[in-house]
Length: 249
Image (cartoon, rainbow, N blue to C red; front, side, top):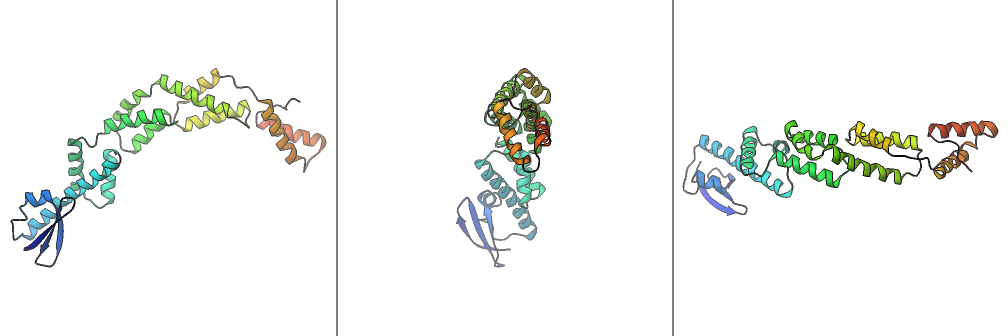
């Protein structure tokens, strides 16, 4: 293949025009490495090697562009490039180069992720660990990072969150509220033993106003079908299921 002419383009690219009427974009590093502005003729075998090498640079610059917008783990970069059609060699060379240049570092990523979630979210340590695992962070790296989320930090954060939830309760009895808090915070990645200890240490009293509100709601609904003692029994049953006693006058 004979190179007929070339044209310099933005972003460090050159377009080379060949005698077979095809044109290809190559990165400046490839142009210099293979002396493509000096060479007039390229064998097909060498051309395929050059194209593949150019793919390595293309993969690298694409990953770099992504990392300029947001930090990513090694596994996330691999997935991103694989979805865009780059082969294993392209991806491995890109990862190696990015690691050498310290653009990706899973240990630092894990530490930053844990710290940011402690400060800005309501997630517990178990949920954060699961999320980091899904991002391809090794168990060793996320366990090390989670040392910042100590038992003391978890207890302090959890107590604040539980008190806030109790303060905003408008329709649940103490019994049901505690059950819901245990379930919700367990699902959000906090340790069950820690949740139970805090709930046991906090006195949650049934709000008579809430009980009255629930009573009125069920009275309005059930009185359309029942009356007298049967109505009273049905309402008591509903209130009991919600963890309430009959409200005081």
